[in-house]
Length: 44
Image (cartoon, rainbow, N blue to C red; front, side, top):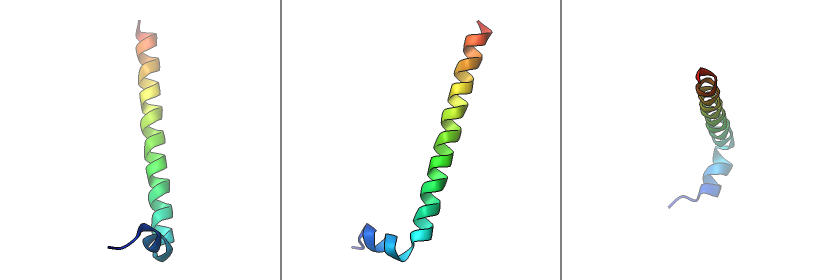
């Protein structure tokens, strides 16, 4: 079984990109949720 650390050493760029993508996705989702919440508040 391949260790994650070995993978990380072999493909640092890949993991860097993956983590950046994940973070940006999450921030978009969170922002979207917050906007929806704000809109609900204003509609009442």
